[in-house]
Length: 116
Length: 110
Image (cartoon, rainbow over all chains, first blue to last red; front, side, top):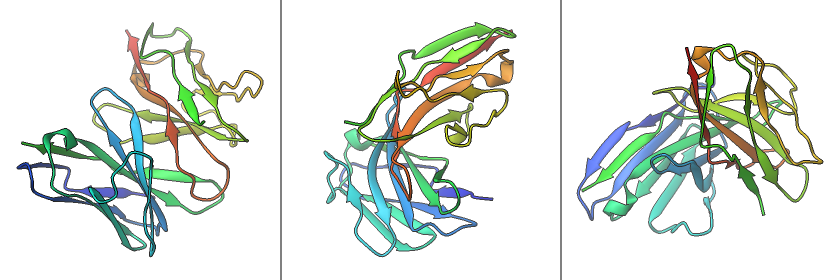
């Protein structure tokens, strides 16, 4: 159990276009999901906390108008990279928080975004 | 400020040798500490957490509040332990965000 999926697994787009990445908790409900960004050979950097039914909380330095997050249901959060540029090329990873005895996040497989 | 430091980017040991991956943290309060592992071509997954005090796949980690450390140890390394290891911390309770260290790539040589 506790599986998180991401779609697409990789995407290539032209500069100036927008790209939407989906994060789904497949077998549990997640009121909170997290979006991370990982540059090559670097660690995960939290971008934002996505809360179901409310606005996302962005980390310092992350442009909320650039990275739109929508968490419209208990199993789906989406990250839209608007007007993408080559510097937005990265590996985007989501996680979903499972409510239980322990505070645990389950991670998706990641989405590789390449902006040409 | 919340910070996790893993001083070693790369660590290479021989099969059967002891392994220790270092992790130090700074946090104003009582954090929860984790070790996550990422095997080749797989997603990040939880290895262990300090509050459960378990041994997973032979790995253990003890939270040392005096030294603000949470080092990961295994007495006898196996080849399948080769992976990327991340130390992380969060606050306690609820859906808390994770702060990750830079990661240590562990390679077990045959």
